[in-house]
Image (cartoon, rainbow, N blue to C red; front, top):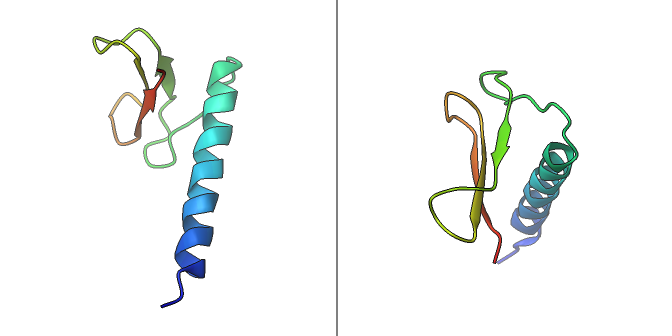
Length: 67
């Protein structure tokens, strides 16, 4: 079984999310790919050690493990 295509796709997705989070952390405006709403980064969530990056409609939602 050849997993190279899956590995490349997973790696590309990881790098895309990493770059998106870098931009948000720098205070840059990043738009949701689906609804074009502005993504926000919230590091003070109800769950200790977690943060979240999401758009107003929640079509993009990235949960961060800060621990």
